Amino acid sequence: MTLQSPRELIVQSLTGTRLWLIAAGKPTGSILNLGFGEREKRRVLLKNPARTPMERNFAPTISLTMFCAWRVRHGKRFIATWRDPNLRGGPMLSGLEHLRDRRVIKATIAPTIADLTLRLEGGYALEVFADIRDGEESDMNYVFRCGATTFRCTPDGSLERM
Image 1 (cartoon, rainbow, N blue to C red):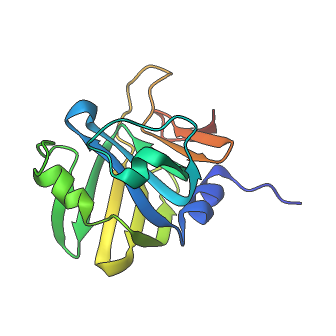
Image 2: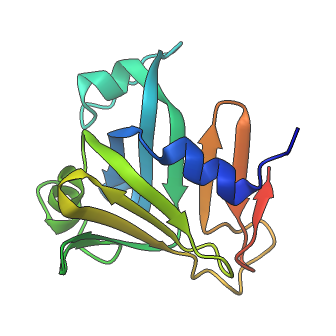
């Protein structure tokens, strides 16, 4: 039996899944949390009125949380970035909303640093840049969780199990 590398596991887990949870906005700053895959009934329901009923009642089986720079592209046009204003109805949230309920067609992670690109249906792409380089050992560029398996992208751009 061959063990999958973190890169292989992340790419295979995300490819073909539907993105259905988007958590971003004023309380989170530029941090972006996305949920993919199956829905699991939450033990404790969320009360946040900014979340959809689906998000309040269900948790994703796969999640990706970004603390680093990211952007959303449609073709050659940028429609949202981590630097956009994050107010309700603003460019960050309205741009991210284009990704909701779209399937990940292809996921790739750069070979030398762990920059991540998700290509989604309809010509959309989410590009994640592992640009946190001089942080503390506990700092992370992004965190990927699939079931009981969690990886973080460290300041040196490597992927390690948490």
